[in-house]
Length: 58
Length: 140
Image 1 (cartoon, helix red, strand yellow):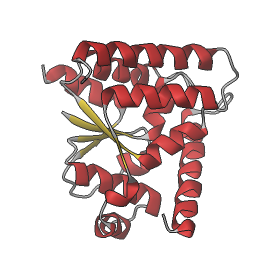
Image 2 (tube, rainbow over the protein chains, first blue to last red):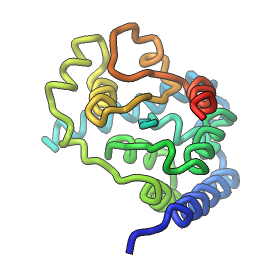
Image 3 (cartoon, rainbow over the protein chains, first blue to last red):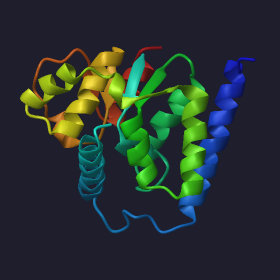
């Protein structure tokens, strides 16, 4: 059975809140970084994942 | 509106870096669902997952699955990615731009200045969360 719109909104909210709660209880991997530094760190991960994909041919 | 959110938007919206607009944007998308639809490729899911614990990654998958489906990277035509590479984007960023075009996105939302400073003709807009929020608000 397809989920109703309201049910999807509630489910998404439940999972979002759980992530936010968990994240707030741990040190962030971006602690001490500026926004630009964090974005650069995220981009580096993107490049690594992409290179891995190309190398594996997937 | 059809939106593609870059990985930094999800990551910041979870509170890994305090970015009020990113947090707000994800709330607006969720609360107004299905007025604004998000689409996401597997690459962005994996990027976000890299910065989360396995438990939170599972929560993220559940969160995304409630609002959309995850598209496999392989669906995006290679030629589209090559087009954006030729416009100066790095291969992985070019893939994200190609994906946005492929799904017919209205907006690619990102805080990444490599995208935001891209001055080329595009079939979609590239906006940071703050400007996207304003646009969504004005689109009522």
